[in-house]
Length: 298
Ligand SMILES: Cc1cc2nc3c(=O)[nH]c(=O)nc-3n(C[C@H](O)[C@H](O)[C@H](O)COP(=O)(O)O)c2cc1C
Image 1: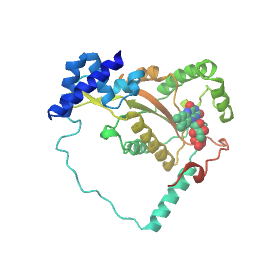
Image 2: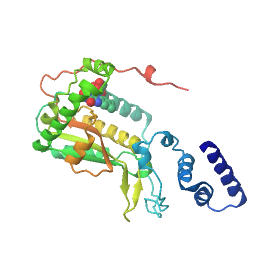
Image 3: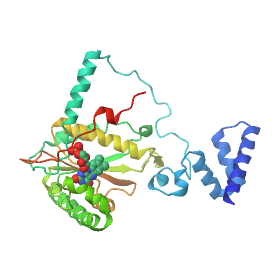
């Protein structure tokens, strides 16, 4: 029944669009409301904007980009200037050398779960986070907050939350296959690195922001933008000479968010303990897929 109503609305909308030619956004909003009522018109908005998944599954992302009250003023200044790009053409030999050197550097990156408490200058952490902040983001929304934890009291509280949840995760929530796959990596719910590391960097995804006029700013592709920024963060940590392990604390988000007083628009996605490896630190003897297995050429 609903299908026929949607079909009817689409046909009516097309007829309206063909009859006159004002602004298409205005048309779709006016006609949808007129012929389909409020609820169906919202559903059609979702379909028209390509957010098909949100129809069947109401995810965080659907809530993030819902446009119940569309605000058609851009988040960036309307008169944004376009300036000349500063760049230099690098000779091929230098390109090859640069890319090779960077690959060699990054190939030495390893996840380290046994960190030392040796101090790290705070300036390094600032530079690492600044590097992450140079990441591209959907419509330049920069949907990230990096919470840097140095206080031992805070680290202990975070560790207590994570170890408490992780014990339940390992014993009850994670599948047998998952915990079996993790066994060779020797990861457990006891995580001394959370208090050993001189710094923890917690990365929050901002599901939406606020414009200067107080209205809601949509953060398109915030998940992808955040993941790219985290890639930059990892590269910056490694380039500085420090180590970390990527962690995604399962079910700890709300408690840690309230501990750190972060707003409900932010969701904890990653936690990185950052520091030097402990003396005699061991890492699993893993091997990376060769180029032929990760690249296809056309
Ligand atoms: C999304 C993601 C989540 C991860 N979560 C954890 C984790 O919770 N605990 C952990 O010890 N390692 C975690 N890791 C680290 C992986 O186990 C590690 O990257 C992998 O074993 C490869 O080792 P390498 O980083 O030394 O190359 C995670 C990595 C990624 C990318």
